[in-house]
Figure 1 (cartoon, one colour):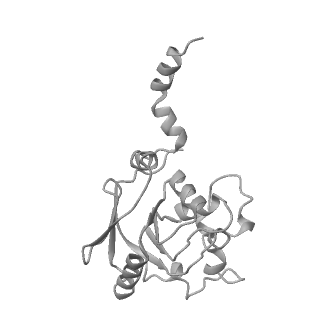
Figure 2: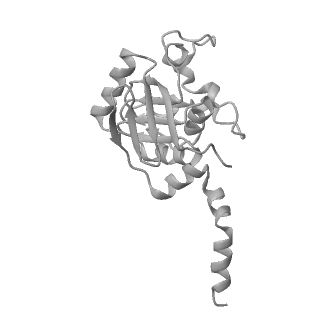
Figure 3: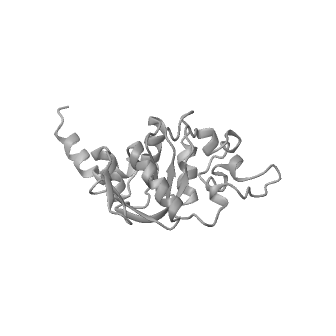
Length: 198
């Protein structure tokens, strides 16, 4: 399944300055029974967003209209815990196209890259700068430039570079998942196979 192409994303951001957010908090286990990738965004951070009677918790950031945007800024060690890909699905389905943190769990990071969410790892100092900027002005914007591999706080011009594998970067720029990538080079694969000795 192809995903949105990712080139340069300019957006305000939603701050979640909580460390060690695990995948069960991102999408509770009871929502993993679905066989289709639908409505996971409705249950992103379900137990933090809603009371037992399904009324929204006013003090949770996703229920606060002050904050909006396609970028989620999380605390250190975001996406720890189990390997469930549903956590990345929930982030994507909610509408986030990038998650910024000073550290990601490797499996969560990989799952994000596989489905079109860009994990941007920054220094703890830059993460703190971003949180403070959003606190001062919830409408402050970040620019995430995938081709240049930079993230910029537009209000001040402060910038950092981030790492991403060349393969995953190329896939995200083109909106490819792994299957799309293989289909895109099908002729090369067939040509290589034709040259193999029998």
